[in-house]
Image (cartoon, rainbow, N blue to C red; front, top):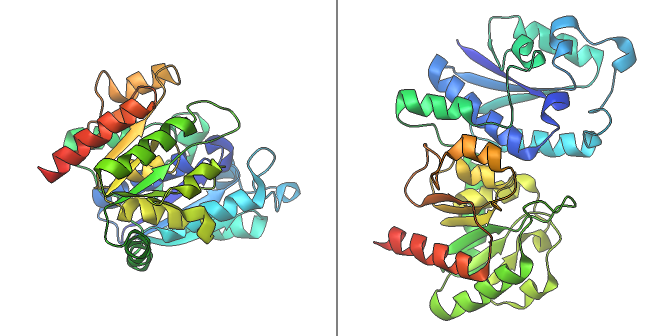
Length: 316
């Protein structure tokens, strides 16, 4: 039996949700490449511990300073366990847990990424390079999915709240850094006007602070008001007919899914990195029809234009 062990190194990834989703897509590629029957994910403070063992003075580090602490790790493990095809998740925050995982990783399984390469800086959790290269060879990529039960729940939730109207999942990024955050006034104007021309029901996902005015719109549901956690948000992104939002961690779930998406990225934010990812195109090389990344400002006019374009394409 071929077995894959994915390495989620908190020191080198920073614990970012978007980077974790990229890793999960890479693990699906490894599963397909090696025809593996089992995929585990190992969450470790530092990949060095998988080569050298964990010194006793580092035991129970729980992610270390700057990595969000145990709460952030709990959210990551919830996402990992929610994904279809993940067999198990091993959190290595004490010496005994690392020793158990070392026995697993030395039993002939494929490690991804290779810890030595990771430590040398040869693997970038924040890049789709591995995925793009696989698409170049294979002509397609495996598509991420939550488990069947989670997906069924998400479809029921959308149906109940939308009453049969087309469901659009929306993530309005609102981080303290202020970089490439959503313009709430523009999104509010777009969604309010959309009531006049389209029956769509918009589901705002994520725990970001949201302008209270969205709650007054009859074509909007705030999923956070129902106490939904991050794995539930990802399931809603997959279940909705369309995803719209800013380039963010949750948006990566749409990026590797099958449904149409309109992801906005402010043109002066990460311009060099986005050029490496997309070139001059408005889509990734592995994108399906209706899947676009728009390096433009999220004005109400741009949102409406993109929405009209994708809905016309999907209904054609």
